[in-house]
Image: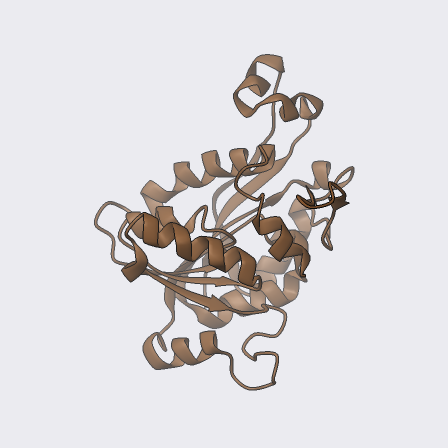
Length: 242
């Protein structure tokens, strides 16, 4: 079984501090990117179990939810049904390293859907805690290929300070062993340089966050204590300029 399929079983319940920091950042940005009543078309790269997908749909967006893992997408589908937002979420299995192709070398189902219904591009792309698992140039090329001119990208990742001493991972619920999928540490400057190469410009400031002290760490649970004073999360909003 793929590591990400295994991860899906515990992804929402293992008290991940980085995910909690990510939720705070995303929740702060969405009111500006998706005002109430928005009907924007948003693609989410690396949607996982739908932690952000449901939020986007509830704000009125139509969401093209993309992930490589069937296990993660299965969890998302269950959440969408439970939250009654199935009509706003369109799920596609896609390996972004292959986009716009699928594993058989032909246009993927996601690419076909884009060509059929969204040939002018999507309004925005959301991708959180994903690029550490991807080649950064392939990622920005895929985002640029589907985004409208002047469209936006909400991007977050593990901070390079955290990435220098750790990487994303989880305990296999069956064996208890620690599993760490492939991980690439992308410093802020590397991200911004790659973004610029594909026509993206920074909108606002880069956010860097982590448990500042013992009191701050309490809101993230006991796993946050060892990260006090270390930057764990980086977030930014980029705009595509032609």
